[in-house]
Length: 200
Image (tube, rainbow, N blue to C red; front, top):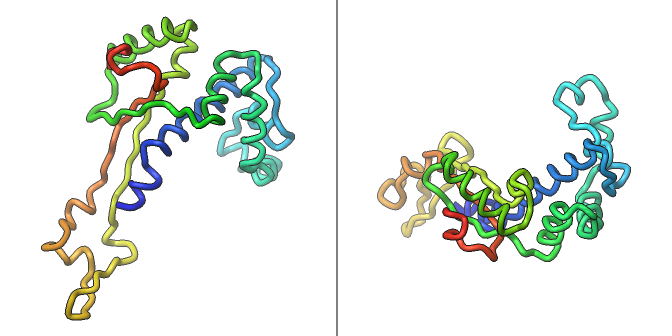
C-alpha cells in the first residue's frame, strides 16, 4: 500500500514519464544528426540504443552504464532547457521547473480515436506538428501487487500481544484483495490545458 502511495504517486508517475519522453527526444535528435549536449557517460546512450545482446557481447557497454549517474542526466537536462529544438527545451524546462504534466488514471487505455483527437488538439495548442505533439501526450500503465503472501510475511501485533500474519488476518484486511495485481492506465498532458480541450 505504501509502495503505491509513494512510488506510484501521481507526481512520481508524471515526472518519470516526462523524463522518459525527454530522453526519447534527445535520442531521436542525436540519431538524426542534431547535436545534443551530453557527458562522456551519457553520449554513447544517445548515439546508440544498446540491446541486452550489446551488454552481453561488448563489456564496454556495462562499463559505460556503470559510469552513468543522475548527475549526467540532470546536467544534460539543464543544458537542454536552452536547446534550439522547441520540444526538447520545453520538456526539459518543465522537468527542471517541476511543472509536471496533469495525470488522469483511466479504467482502460486510450482508444485510437481518443488518442488521435487529443494529439490533433495538442498539435494546435502547442503550435507543433502532430508527430511532435505525441511528446506532450504521455501514456502509461502502473502495476503493483500490494502484498505478496508468498514473500516475506508481514505480522500484525494483536491487543493480546500475539502476532498474526497479515494474510491470515482476514477480518482486518481482505488478503485476497491485497494479493491481487492492481493495474492502472494513465495519461498525462500539460497542466495548462483542460481534459475537455483535448477531448479526454
